[in-house]
Image (cartoon, rainbow, N blue to C red):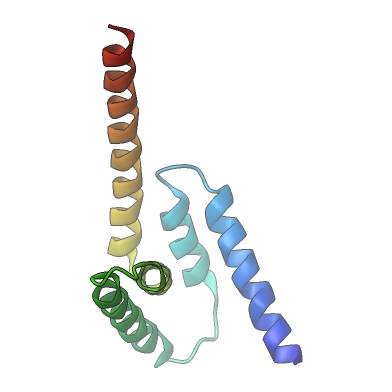
Length: 117
């Protein structure tokens, strides 16, 4: 039971760290935080990468039918594992987040413009 609580505490800490991060930097900061941990076993990084890829693929496959939500959750879990181990994934997600917010801001501006006409 103690190990379960410890795992939940670590998960909560990781999620709050990503949530509080600045837009465009949060995933890279999370990657750097994870890399600062010392004393990890040599097999953990390839294991996390493999599990992350499997979760992303499973999430995408489950999202194809109308069910969707469990697949989305699995995809997010897989991406979080990949972000913690691969810098390129962290950088791509940061750039994607900034681009996504730019597109949303542009669409809101256009929508407001056409609604005022």
